Image (cartoon, rainbow, N blue to C red; front, side, top):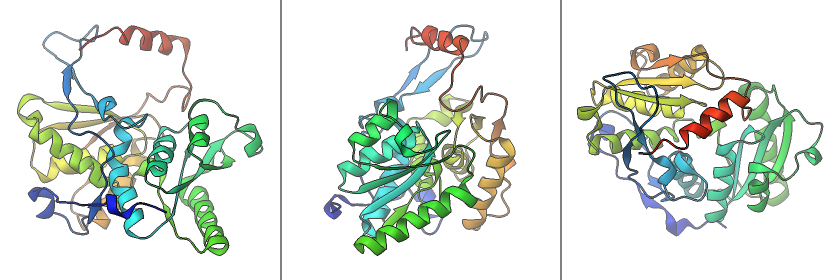
Length: 298
């Protein structure tokens, strides 16, 4: 049984309350926020430029990093709706799925993970990497083909799992999309942008750059930047799907928010060409660069 007493009433910043409706009522505290911003002494930075890094590895939430920002709202919504189960999806070594399994276990929720992989059955999943952590948290794992898309494959599969759980136990399930990127998870990064405001980022920086894997970070930061009339430029480097996919996804979100007059391409810059070999796959050259970056101190 989930712990309803951990729900906190969400007090949205004024700029959110004045601009948006359907604001979540609750959140749960999973991270130690605000996280600091440190100068990052990277090699080969062009003259006249400085690079800083937002240290979301310091959220303090076990192995979850920035994932807790969305989960604070998503899992609060699940608990407030009386759900006992959380169902989400992703790649076989998904960090989002791992973070969901860990956070849900801490809150007394049962987790079900629909994982994409080039495997014939769940028996081939094994117990390595994030899958090991998923299993240690008690998550039920379901394997689907690696090329299964969300709307026509993953979502219907999650819905069938929820129906089965209801029939077998009478308990309700809460479905979370890939990466936790939806109208509820959005508030994790609207709050993230508000955190940047309190840290003086719009006055001290020109650009924000991040990896775009499911679109939630892009949506929250770009929308926060737009609503506060900040002059920051928002850049997302796509590491899955592509620019057009994420622009279409953001357009759908803007429609849900009744902000159809805002064009996704006008509030964010998305950059293709950096997916590499695929999710969780690295070349020797990339691993060498990671090694060098590990010595770049703040």
